Amino acid sequence: MRTMRAAAIGAATLSLALAATACGGGSATGGGSNDAPKTLTYWASNQGASVSADEKILRPELDKFEKKTGIKVKLEVVPWSDLLNRILTATTSGQGPDVMNIGNSWSASLQATGALLPWDAANFAKIGGKDRFVESALGSTGALGKDPAAVPLYSMAYALYYNKQAFAEAGISKPPVTWDELVADGKKIEATGKNGLGAEGSNLSNNIHQVFVLAKQHGADFFTTDGKPSFTSDGAVAAVKQYVDLMAKDKIVNQSNAEYAQNQSLSDFAKGRTGMVLWQTASATFKSMGMKDSEWGVTAAPVQSGAPGSGAQTNSMVAGINMAVFKNTHNLDGAAQFVKFMTSDEEQKLLNTTYGSIPPVKAAQLDPAFNAQGTAVLRQTLAGSAQALPQVADESQFETAVGTAVKDLFADAAAGRAVTTESVRAKLQKAQQQMPAK
Image (cartoon, rainbow, N blue to C red; front, side, top):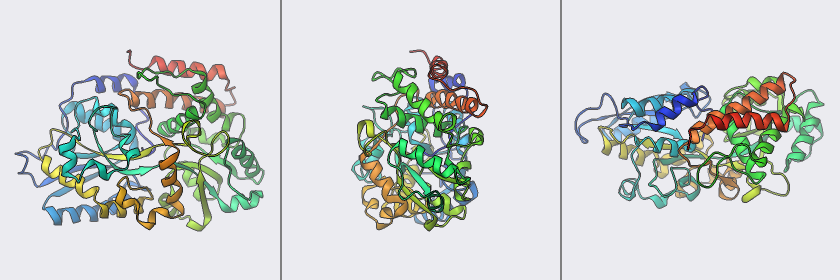
C-alpha cells in the first residue's frame, strides 16, 4: 500500500473498531433505492505530491465518468495520516462514502468489520471478471479463502532510487545489489558531505514495509501460519535491528530522519541532499518536486546476498491501492459502474502512468509506458520478488504496534542510546503485548 498510514491510532481503539459488528458505510446524502441516486461519494487516497495535485488529476476523470453515466462523483482526497481512522469511524457509524481507496495491506482487517461489499463472482462479473487482474495484486485483497473485500486499483513495489550526481561524486560506478554493498556505498556518499540513505523513522507504515521485507530475508515473519503474532523471533529481531542499524551503527542515515514523516526523505533526495532512498513508486513524486528523470536511476531493492527472487530473496512487499465499496451504499449499481470505470484498460493506463505506478489489470500492463525507467523495475519486482503483507484481521494493529517500536528505536539511535539485540527484542515484546488476545 501507499506509504503513510494512520500513525496515531491507538491499538485499543483500533481493536474495538475492528471487533465491532459494523453496519457498513454508504453516502449519507444518497438516499432512495439502488437506481435512484445520481451521486456517489468517493474517498481517494493521497497518491501524488499533495492533496490538491490529486484533485487536479482525478477531477477530469470523474467528470468523464459523469458524462458517460450521468452519475456525479463527490471527491474527497484523504491524507494517509487520516485515512484509516476515517474508514474505521465510518465502519462503526455507517456514515461514510460509497466508494473509497484503501491500502491493500488493510484489506483483511477491514474485511473483518463486515462493512465492505464482498467481491464474489457476480460482482466481479459487473466489472469484466476477476481474471482481468494480476494474481499478485489479488493476493492483497482480503483473507485467504474468502471473497475479496476490494478490487486492485494501483500496484506498487519498493525499489532503490539513487542520485546519479551523488554516485559520480562518490566514485560509485553501479548501484548496490546487496545490503553490504549499500552500506559501503552509503559511507562513500557520506564522505562527500551528503547523506547516504534517506529514511522516515516517524512513518509507521514505511517502517513496517522495510522490516517486513528484511524479516523475509532473515527467514522469518511477524505472524505464524495460524495468524498469531510472532514479533520476537530471532529473524524478526534481526530484521528490525538491521534496519535501525543503518542509522545506529552504519551511520548512513542522518539522525534527523528519526523524526521524518511522509515524503520528507523524498524531498531531501530530490534536492540532492541524499544519495539513495528506498521507496515505492517514486518517479512521479520526484518530478513534482522539480527533479529531472535524467538525474536519478532506479534498481531493485537490496537482498542479503545474490540477486532478488522468491523466498529469502524477497525485496519488496506487494504494495498498492485497492478500491472498496461499502455494502450499505444507496447506489450499489452506480458504485459498481464507477469501479468498472476506474479499472478499465483506458483509465488504468492513464492513472497509473500519471502516478508512476503499475496497473493491476493485465491488459493495461502491456502498454510501453510500463517498461520505462521508472516502472520496469517495479513491474519485474512485483512479478518475481515481492510478497504480500500478512492478510490477517490484526494487520492494522500490527502496523501501529511494530511501526511504533521501530520509530522508538530510531529515536534511541538519534539520541545516541545503544540499539542492541536485547533492546530491539524488548520493544517488539511490548508491541506483541499490545495485540488483541487470541
